[in-house]
Length: 123
Image (cartoon, rainbow, N blue to C red; front, side):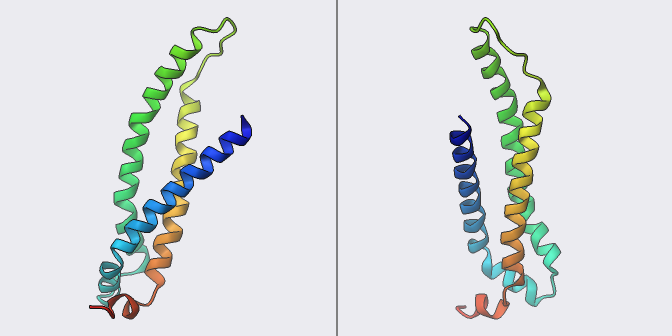
């Protein structure tokens, strides 16, 4: 179970990494123009992170109650069932959010530090 759990988390992180990379690649020219106009790395990172973090928060708000309900229904069939506390799901959501922030920060900072002349050269 532990091996499959780790594999699932790695696959989910790769999917998140792909989504973030795709979003940053779509906005490379916008990042270049903002840098030329004087935007800081922090403001560019905040700009890119805001939209994706909202999506992650909405997905957590939807997933936590659904997973709590499904797990309680599934565990009702067992004689020796455990009680699921709400903080277990909150902790999992916080860990997922931290992983998303780290991944997002690394990609957006890398894009914000890049030379804007390279991204704008094709225009």
